[in-house]
Image (cartoon, rainbow, N blue to C red; front, side):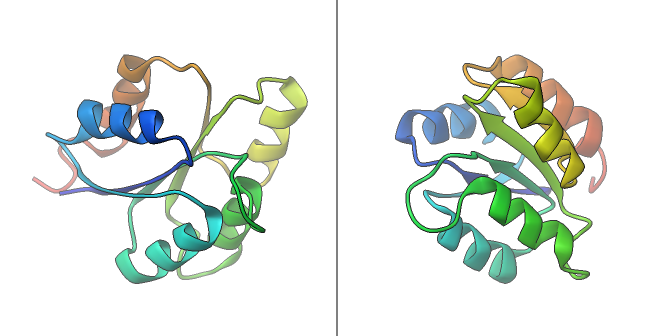
Length: 124
């Protein structure tokens, strides 16, 4: 089963994603960038759903840089989930290697459809 790491400081977003994806994917969730880096190292998810603005010293773009800058993790898919909806924000994430960018509030159905297109039937 495809492993997905949810990285978001908002409990309601984590819960929404768990309700939307939990039947089809193996999910884990953390609240900040430092915890995300630890979880990625330990669990090696195939997809990270990543918020940009989070508490602590490491924001989502720094987590993205760490994932894509490491040869052992650069193949992990990363979808940004952010309230920052400006074109420059999206370009910054895309230039750093993000695979998708969803602006909050996002459509859970649209997000699941994108995930399904990448991962459904991969491990069955």
